[in-house]
Image (cartoon, rainbow, N blue to C red):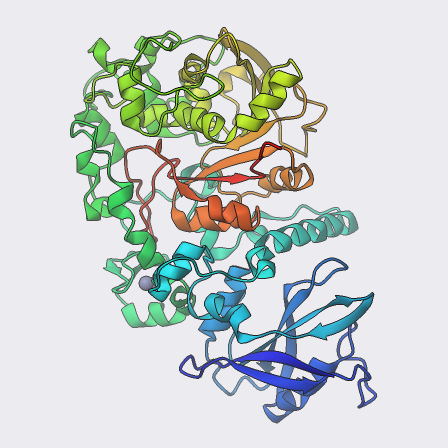
Length: 603
Ligand SMILES: [Zn+2]
Ligand SMILES: [Zn+2]
């Protein structure tokens, strides 16, 4: 029987080639020892080429085969002598990225084959060029519009289903391997081993362990992390240092992403567009805002919401937003007392009351706004919310309200089925909000979620799951705190980690209908793995997450499979302020992009 494999030459001017090999399954040279799992047709076919090059044949699973999954394997050659230069294989590396293997780098020629069970028999299966061409030559993004845009065609460009779901399969495969490794060694897996190089660097303040926060105001080289000032001339999305050619050559994997990132950078105007606001957001829209000396602190001072350095420091929600969290040890976090209730007036501390939403439920009489079948106002922009809540367009409250409004958006936009189910069971909607340490600084602002819900019909039990070491210092004794935020929203703050110190089905106020993670960065922390695995094994639970930028959002969304990847979209309630980034110049906003795992459909 003949089987087809695809050769990806390291030289990308050479087209992808199909090679036909004889797969008689017998391993006719009699040495069935090169791999343990199949008839050796591909390895023995490639073995002679490896020997010609004085190299060792290396097999890499792009997608591991199992009883239900047809695998995909890459074969490359590792030089024994190291005398020959190894040329980067951009296309094969891009394909690996599409499969969620962000740290995989291929050099030299690479062959791709498929392997799976047919009628209980493990066998090589055909692969055609069409299957991998877009992932190899175009983008690891794989969203149909992205591929269409990069191919310069209208409509959708699709990839095979196995490829669209490979990142998800690999992530869970990794989870089982990690669990196995833990059981074998009883050793902690270090963060460093878990983080892939480029993905984690895109997840800044909240997802960076406090010990490694980089306090610098200058851009850093993508490769050496030294001071840098030169943008990649093609995508303008990444900085390299002055030793331009050297670092760019060494960081060749950027070429796998460069054209895709150019597309992301082209979304800058749309992302930066908040036409309703009266101008207070505009200083943030400049292209060089990421390298500006004008810090967030200066910006908030100019807005008059925090005091200048000479004045007595104010204590309000703005100072805590500014200082971030830093493990509960930042200047402002030390002052936070989550047992003490704060009004909007004290929290926002704005002189003009027209800048602050009033603390009451919205009703059908409030404004010219549509309501959905559950009675929730349908808000699609900051303008809708400001007008509904009669807030002046000169008010900067959106900078903080991004957190409750994004939560509201998750409920209104993706929560219809969970709301229906909760109502049928005559119990409140249960939402677990995971990894919300910084938001503890302004708990009371989340009353806004309650005010936007119809108070008679929708009750919510919101559970905030907070890392124990990140509880505010004043509340270290209280590992579980319940607050009646509004008449229809109860908030329980629980210290612990999902799936580790907490069992979501038993230790909390019932298993969740929805899980929400704001600025989650699912790749960055090992603890997110429990959340993702929970969603994977509970397909009736909806997960909604946000991320700072399109690249990180895409990679994290891909962990939920093809549907989740396609769901990635701009969040209308992103913070109207571009965030600084230090080696990537991708447009980046707090709660910038939103995506959903396990979207539910009414049957
Ligand atoms: Zn450099
Ligand atoms: Zn570039």
